Image (cartoon, rainbow, N blue to C red; front, side, top):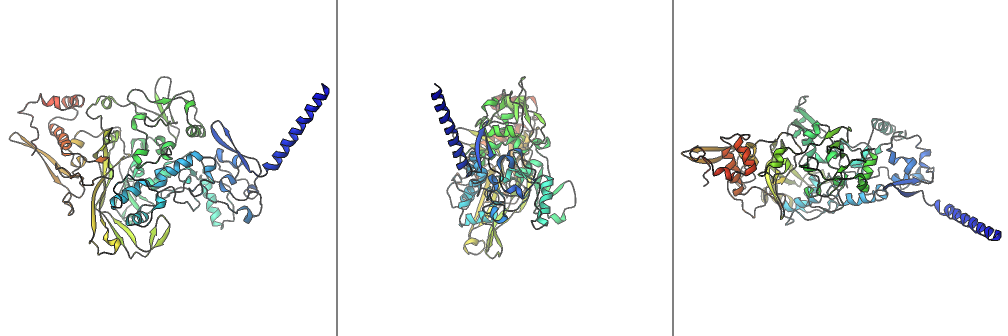
Length: 632
């Protein structure tokens, strides 16, 4: 028995020695190992890196990206064994996180997130490229999938390179420093890079010293995203970021503006005038309070346009009866990371999820009494999530209206855009390749303004929804100027409106007349829409504010002609599933508008029409007193 025990002990010791040998032999080849802990990734450093022998006592890191936990080379690469600067920095990436290196840096830990980002519209710019090619006549649909990096040099491609290609995540961040209001791209840095005041001051000293005085404060990479991260790109085009903060772009010259709280001059000398801010912004809410990582980084699927990628709806927080929720232990790995990084403590409460794709809103919860709350990601403030008011829930007539149709206070408008190619421009800057050349597309706009949104119809096989619209492309393209023809010799004109989510939400809704008797809302453009009643006959007339455009004889800002059908072959929208009102729909709107000439919107009879519709009430009207429109 003793002999058997000794034999077992001998082999046991031999096995331990062998395991130790294998570990010593092979572990030196690895600087770190990845281990999974509580459904999120922890990168644990096994060998001491040489980096900190020079970069001593640096601080500022987020807890999850501290060198003590993941080392320096996990992000910056380089040679961690050498203490000589030249050798140690060989293969090093000074600014990691650009999409060009993300697979080697951020993507080593965040593989799924990187896959999603690479397919997202913010990385591919597919929607922008598709619409541009469609309008230039280089594609027969705006729904094809593209990638901004594959853009060549056709007229449409050159137009994108000259005017549009700044705003995509693949644009490289090559300079040290914080994300600003004019920052574009930067891959993971675009959202996750944060500089403290100490880090900014330290960087300034480092640059002043000709990069000899090494910084002690390192910028942080974390989930604490603020609105500045969004602003650089989303203050362009439909101007969501500026709208949200309550600023409307103008054509004013920055030098002519006196210091005033009514004006704001952005970097690049763009001048804005003060308008009403979004109610969520007035409460201190950030963009990411609503648009979580699942929307911002994408879900891995390829979408044609942003409205398909955005899953969150107002009703997810402002629900009718009861919200869609899940328990904490059902959170996916990505949501769990955000929950843990933000140190939330509502594990015992159910969490709201978006109805469309079930992604969780980790900064929300429902308490034991059934009350829902949102935790502001910027200030930690608790916001009660009020259910929809009764009028929204009981209104049968407006059930096909999006929330933003009624709750948007204003939206940006631009008209009179002329695009031509200047073949002699000596310093044309290619926004995609970041280099100068000769010849450039140039854009001139007649007017920036704002108004209540126009209404359009989103119509698919399964759904019909009224949504806000803006004159996105009422433009003239001088195509001939690109091919060497005389100016004006080959011109294409387009009158296109685009679906729009203004992000100018107000608790108070627009009144009935602002839709049913408003020319711009229906699509005729600004002007006087007048209802006259003479000799028992009601007649609608429209007098446009803007002159008629020579190309189609419509007012400069119009979407459709007054009470006339649009040729079905006419392209009048940037989407195939979004259109203006038909004449039948216009007449229905104006019929209610004629009733509003005498009956106030909040009157008993008009309120009853919201429940029963207008037709039952028309059967009860006094034909001598109620004069309805006579359509020609």
